[in-house]
Image (tube, rainbow, N blue to C red; front, side):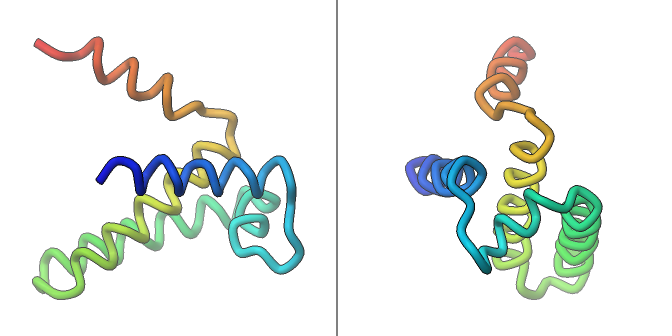
Length: 90
């Protein structure tokens, strides 16, 4: 299961380091305003889908993808985020 997240992160980082023409991921990485607006949009869509009990999985996947791209675009290492979460265990 987490292997899918690792593969997605690998793809995002690959696009960041080796941009590909017409790549949606590259368009997000290159335009931070677009990246922010997509994260906000996808979170709102997830909230709405939960409230309406429709399409929750699809919307949650969109949020995760866009959040990972946002983190990479802003030099926030997911491994460091995970370390921080680990420190918060009680």
